[in-house]
Amino acid sequence: MDFNTTDEQTMLRDTVSRYLADTYSFDNRMKTVHGGAGWNPAVWKAFAEELGILGAPFSEAHGGLGGGAVENMIVMEEIGRALVIEPYLPTVVIAGGALKAAGGALADAVIPEIIAGNAIIAFAYAEPQGRYNLADLRTTAKKDGAGYVLNGHKSVVYSAPYATHLLVTVRSGGAQRDKDGVSLFLIPADTKGVTRRDYPTVDGSAASEVYFENVAVGAEHMIGGEGAALTLIEQIVDEGTAAICAEACGVTRVLHATTLDYAKQRKQFGKAIGDFQVIQHRLVDMFMEVEQSVSITLMATLKLDTPERAQAVSAAKAKVGKGAKFVGQNAVQIHGGIGISNELVVGHYFKRSTMIEGQFGSVDHHMGRYERIVIG
Image (cartoon, rainbow, N blue to C red; front, side, top):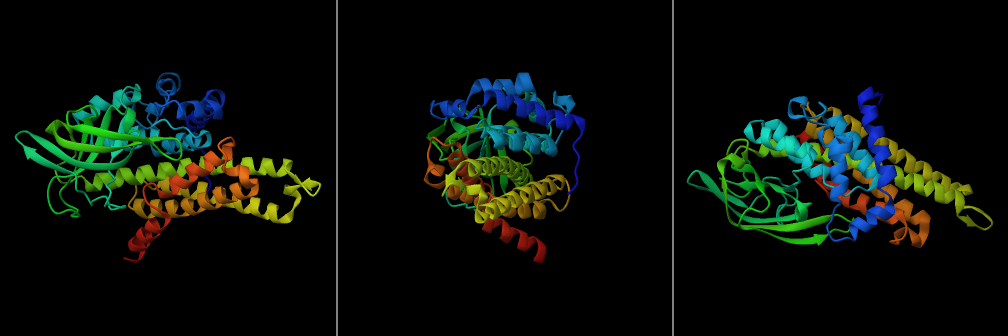
């Protein structure tokens, strides 16, 4: 696919790439991972104030750069290259996307706070029984006077340990898996009745089990109409899926480049292992997987505003998931035992590529979804 970025988009990529290359070294990242906080507020502040990238997909009316999905794709690929753990995906792509689509007073109030780096938003949508069915919800919102009362449990909520807000999917009507009766709330994370069990994830991020016990919220915290939010939720999850595909492209680019460099240096039987034909073929196969992932991610990103959105996103996620698995496993295999050691960077990229394969739907899930859309 032939796609030329604008001068502004090229500048955005160069700006993010330079900043991360200069400040987000592997050692600095590992200090953050093991520091206990789960993220680096100074990096987030730089994203907001020095780089201005938190405003990349938002309109100039809200103080943003006037971009959209392509800008998110560019930033997320650079995030993948550097294994950034700060919450661009849940805050800017997903929560920001929901607010942009819904509009209104809440969007006008929160989007400038996102751009300024003050609002950190975690997406609380997954539940233990739900798998990848966005409508399978046991977390409820019951009408209580002019407001609502939330009760339930959300699983693996990335960035929740340090979030200022939670974007929560709930059932406000209907049966557990009905498409109707799904609502969406944006609430302060410190609202009374919200509790968390925090833990690190295998790829170095931080997540929580989040519990809601008689959490009272006002109607002004609802995004979209009562019981009619599933379409919006599906849209923002597709946008998040396309963005995480872009992150995977950045991750696999580094895995391939690192493995290629290693194959040129590692010697066996008196010659570099990269001189052996079987290794050369494997490296070419890895390169092809990376390039195909980049192309199909771009296609999905360009179709996010079209009727083919769901089909394109599922095609991309299935292909990218397979590619990330192939590239990651072969990178580890070519490196040998040290490929999974904590001291070597390739093992950490492999962990992230493995986690990406399951986020927002596995390969099998998206292949099935694609089939249902195309064949019916």
